[in-house]
Image (tube, rainbow, N blue to C red; front, side, top):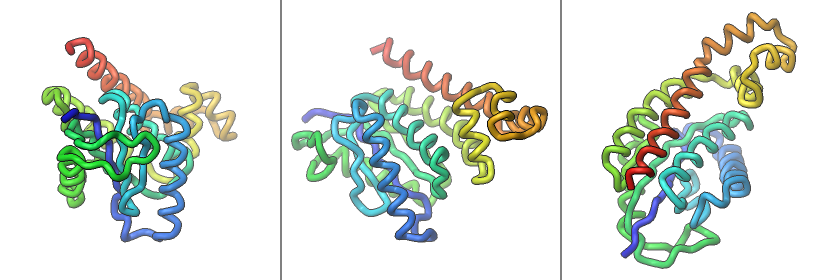
Length: 214
């Protein structure tokens, strides 16, 4: 049977949050990602267990781009929860459903969900189990750095971060926020935005190199 790139995610500590609000926010985020990045999916992100979604992406690169998209959209919309992700290369025995990621069967889906469950009690938010084991390890290490940056950001930082996602120029951001330019320059440093962009670029290079070696 054919193997595919399976992307799953769940809400961290969902039981500790307002269940009605968090589910509304989760549905909104999943729907927006599908609208914006629909071409990255063979089967779209589908909420399956209330606080979890599953999907089939076109490639490992597409999976990583979708992860980045989820992370930045959660911030831009100022949502008060984080996701844990597993990108897994595994077998699916049934036909791929292009309209909803539901009703499909295969060891890959079972194993991916098992791995996602395994990390529920751990701090690691990004897990990779791909055909290329070296790339899996590289992505795991790179995303460890990525997580150390983004998990340091607080809700009070989101407005500043959103402006920096639009423009890297701290003076323009200061104008938009009506703040002193030197203050915003210091905020850019303390939020480690240069390192954030650097690790994203490094991850892209790792994926490009792995693609060239196929």
